[in-house]
Image (cartoon, rainbow, N blue to C red; front, side, top):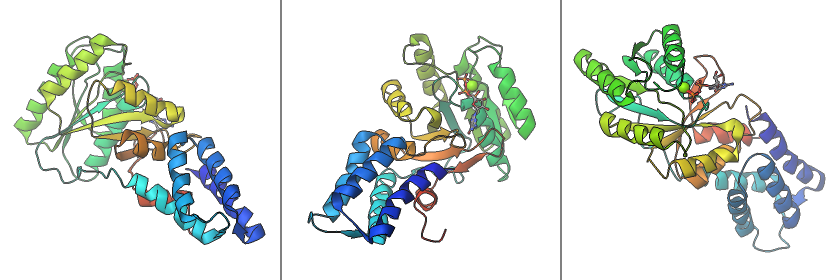
Length: 295
Ligand SMILES: Nc1nc2c(ncn2[C@@H]2O[C@H](COP(=O)(O)OP(=O)(O)OP(=O)(O)O)[C@@H](O)[C@H]2O)c(=O)[nH]1
Ligand SMILES: [Mg+2]
């Protein structure tokens, strides 16, 4: 993961290998190009460059390889840490802890719900999943199949029924059995689907989720950020799950999300198997894209 991004970034340091130190203009051009190619939005890339700029206030100043790396690292780190994860999912303050998953079509909501059910079960948590996508044909069966794989209980109603009542029943079920978590899947929707948006708001009102996660597809890069911005004018959410980072996704979208959505990334999806999910950590990410020498 992020190998291309890492390789590109290390290209800048190679210039410095040749000349020992780098000229300001050379660095800025190289950094801008690499960030843009790696799915960092222009505005975010300029922010990082202005951090470099501040560091190199004297135009004649040259930067060594390690100064450049640590300046870049510090700049990206401060963007990633500006919206820290505020809810500790594994130590919730409430039982059942209700998590609602939202997002547009095909971003990976249903898969992520099942992966997180699996993730929690492996940590001895008791989970029920709500089949809240009653809209798309086959969605309930898809979720039921994945829940079967990971051994998670599922509450489902007929296709076409009211998703808010599925969520309500799942929460009642969890209360009656003292379960730890309710994970609610939902139908993919565009900002143009008025009915579906109203349905989503109703689901949120009824379920009163403790955490709302927006599922975004890293494959569509910066478009994911734009989508989230328009779509989420309608509804508030706490954080993001970024899926499909195992594909040739360019990896810089994580920086753009932190900078422009002002939301933390809670989880990243790293494949199609049920175990392919991990909690996101800025440190882990930085170590991947800008490893210390020798790694
Ligand atoms: N490679 C890869 N594929 C993923 C990942 N997460 C989901 N997918 C795939 O993406 C496709 C869509 O996933 P779903 O979970 O059905 O997406 P959804 O958001 O529920 O889709 P709708 O219900 O139609 O809106 C499936 O083929 C998943 O296997 C991931 O992290 N990596
Ligand atoms: Mg789905």
